[in-house]
Structure formats: C-alpha cells, structure tokens
Image 1: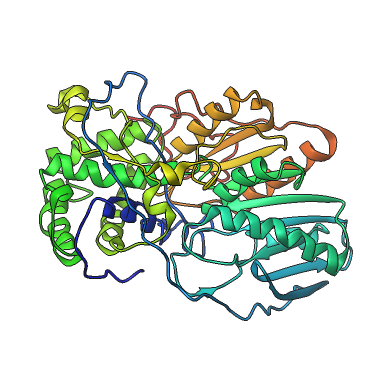
Image 2 (image 1 turned 90 degrees about the vertical axis):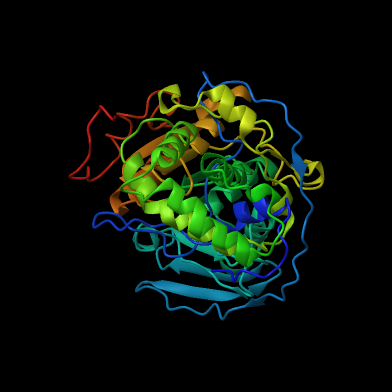
Length: 464
C-alpha cells in the first residue's frame, strides 16, 4: 500500500485515487479458484451506463495536472528454479528483469506473460504465468518480464514485453508460434499490444483484464464521485491535506453509506448505480460488492499523492449515470448534481500517450478473454465496452469472451484457465473458433458453460 503523503487536496487527487485504487488486488477467497498472487489493476472507464440513462448535464469539469514520478527502480534478482524436465533462463535487459522456462521437449511455442499492476514500489519483480506447470507439461516455453518500471504504465509494459521477444530468440531460438497472456493490468497490455504490434503474437488471452484501457481509471473516479454525491461530502472542494480527506471518508462518507451488509438509503442508491454501471444484474454482483466495498474506500484513503501520466488521464465529464427512480433520485438529478472531471487532453493524445487514448479495436490476432461476473475491482463492463469497440472496427470475429460465475478479482480455477488456453491454441493452429458468451446481453445466465465448478450458492438464471 502506498503511504498517504500529507499534501493539499486539489482536483487531480481524484485521478490519483483512480490510479492507486489499482494498487492492491481485491481477491475473494474461494476453495475452487486461484486468486491473483500479486497486486493488480482495477476497473472501468467512462463508466458505461444503461442505454436508458439520462443525458449528462452540462457542468464545468475540472482538468487535471500531472505529477511526475521520481522513483529509482531496481531489478530484483530474477533467479528461479526450473520445474523438473525444464531449464530456467533469467537475467536483465532494457525492459527490466526476465525469466524464461523451456521444457526439455519444447514444442517450439512460447507464451509471453504480462503481469498485473503492483503499485509503485522501487523493486521490479517477475511473476510466473498462472498455468506454468501445464505449459511445461504441454511442451510450451514461457517468458515474463518485470517491466522497466512499476506504476500504471501499460505502454511501457507492452514495449518491454515486445522487446523480450528478442531475448527469447537469442536464448532459445525463434519460436514457431508466440502467445501473449495478460492478467489484470496485463489485459490492457495485451489489447494495447495487439494494436501497436499486430504481427508480434499469434494468439492472445486475458483474465480479469483491463481490456478497455483507460476506462479503469474512470471507474474509480466514478466510485469516488458517486460516494461524494450520495453522502453530501464535498470532497471536490476540500482544501486540506490527505489526512483530512481520509478522515472525511472514514468518518462521514463510509458511515453515511452504511455497512456492506446493512446499507443506508444512500448506500442502496450507491450500489444501484454501481451495479448498472458495471454490467447490470448478474450472479455474484452483491458478493463482489461486499468484497470490495470497504476495500475500495481504504484504497481511496491511502491513494492521495499518486504520480504519473495516468493521474491526468481519467475523467467522468461525459459519463451518463443511471439509477432506479424508486430510490428517490432520478437519473436527471444524479447527472446534473454529480461532480465532473475532464481528462487532460495531452494524456489522451494517441501520438503522445497512445496507451491512454481510446483503443481502436482493430485487432488482427485471435483474442480470448475470461472475466468474473462478481469482479468489482475490474468490472465485467470493461468487456462489454471492448466488444463494442472491436465490433465497430469490424474485428468481432477475432474476439471470444467468457464469463466465469464467481465473485472476486482474477478468481479462476485451473481447469477454467487451461480450457481457455487450449481452446485458443486450437483456434490459432486449426482455425477452430471457440464458443463464448454474448456479454452484451443480460449477464444473469452468462458463464454456465465455462464455470468449473459452479459455486454451491450460484443463484441460477434469475438474479434480483
């Protein structure tokens, strides 16, 4: 967790909150699924709302300055022990530290793994791919980078992963096929890479991925703005230090929303908007919200002072929010009254910061994605948004998406991951496009085919 620095609150703090809300993964324990073992990114962008949502009222949004990063990064020792029947190769390159593991019976294919967000510590570390043992048993080599920097830097991470290909060729020879697997923020790395380096990878897979790019920052911005609106806490004009901001959140905002199990009217309103914004009624939304409710506010308290270009890349100036009018607030009232922030256009300029500019959806490589329905850290609505983008670009046949009916972030069983990978390989090698879910439709019954095992408390096809 990044230590809160005592400094005066200003408009850019909302983007700082958005960025560092990614600093710690919210993993909901499950006996059948393997949680992410590192910190990772969070959720969605210009929070997509229901098509019936009221138009956004005109306000004067704040624009956001950028705080430079002044961290001297260093690479942790990348040495590791190979699995039986494999060879470990490791070292450093311009992209940070790297690890490569090659089975004795290598089939010629390599899987490049893009890890999730770590916060911004000075130490750069490498992470194993989530199905490492399966890859080695199947004859696949894998390679992973620490990246050259931490923070929410998907552009640098994509460039570092791309540069790792030259290291692999030098150490073990040119691969027959190359796959890229991204986890959490690594999902942003994957979708960005498929546009920036269209010839680099033969197939791609993401899990719990920030596939829609900058929308993750917008989601956390909305989380804070909504909590401010429903509790009457004037966080936007608070001109004191981070300690006072944290005190207002903990002493006024969170109590005004109630507990995750016993929300107040303000809390019910907040939850209703969050549900609509993140994909609508679906299995394990309530459990996912409960898992992330206090967590997300703790992150807000500790996130003031985040640095980097991503601070200035989030916005909610054009977000249209929806709410059930039976809760006593109309969509028009909500959209007219909520505070607005406009991204600094410099940091959404495709020429200068393409990683924070809107994705084009113009992919040329098969991509298969997995996402938990009850992930409130990186909501499944990012998948819905990305589908619309890819379809608009005419590449919809290259995207297959699967819902996994479970709460938490990156909560997948090994069998779910292995099935997805093997289906991707069959798609790449034999042209057998696998089945997936229509995530643009109702999510209430989504994911039944791919969730293994189905959770004992699965609600079935009707979700309140």
